[in-house]
Amino acid sequence: MRYFVASDEDRRLDPAARRTSRGDFVALSDGVTHYELAGPEDGALVVLVGGITIPLSYWDRTAERLHARGLRTLACSGYGRGGSDRIDGPYDEALFVRQLAELTSALDLTPPWHVVGTSMGALVAMAYANRYPGNTATLAVVGPAGLSARPAPQRLLRNNFVGSFVARRFGRGLLEGHLGHNVRDPGLSAELVAMVRDAYRFEGSLYAFFRTLRDFPLHERQELFRRTGDLGIPALLVWGDDDRVTPITQLDAVRALLRPRQTHVIPQCGHMAPFERPDDVGDLLASFAVPQSDRLEP
Image 1 (tube, rainbow, N blue to C red):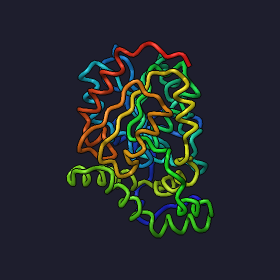
Image 2: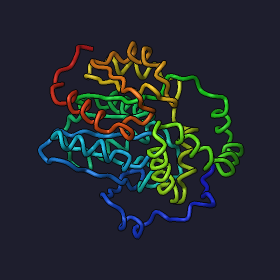
Image 3: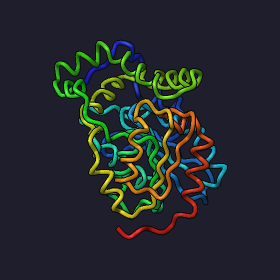
């Protein structure tokens, strides 16, 4: 898919734009990353890994809950999201794992830390844990992607012409339609759409979203779940009972492969549990992270 700028992307992600943003920025090997390191300086670190659409502000309320429980948080916008660079290249799993590894290294943080991933971010978090098991004290996955079959329309994105045409012509509607299924509460749904819509005003955002759909292995990842379960890292599985993006019908399959120490189903909750039920998710993460210092034998 060739790089393009959509007609309604009316902002350029340059130093002037970044000066008006919260948080901090660091230049890594693939580009500039927007991040926020916050909370008690002496608290154990929780690294928050977002899904395919969201900027770092998605985590705000969950991070506040973790701070109140004495934990420090590191959230970043993945490349192509929020204030992080839009790159002209593959948006594959290796890119996002490399971003996490380089960011924690650039900030001179001391491992291990607690890694939390939601949706696509759960796959990134698991891939990171497999690449850097010594850096991962615990692993939490929330509404993970990865077990469904690859849909036929996604295969069409591998064709440069077709992929670019679909993204340019229908991309904004498809993106916002997808967001509308993520949370149950209409008010929160409107807030989510507004947050993402604002972040997607930067040039190259829609390209990054569709390029990720093309390049990132979002489906049929049973082997990644299995390998992660074999690591012996204490794992927590959290799922909303009304998740319409990664249906909870996959819960038993994930439990069999990942073998989490704890599984929690949040009632009356959609796909984006950290956004929809931040206090519940924050309390689960904090309660799980603090006592879990031992590992199972692989």
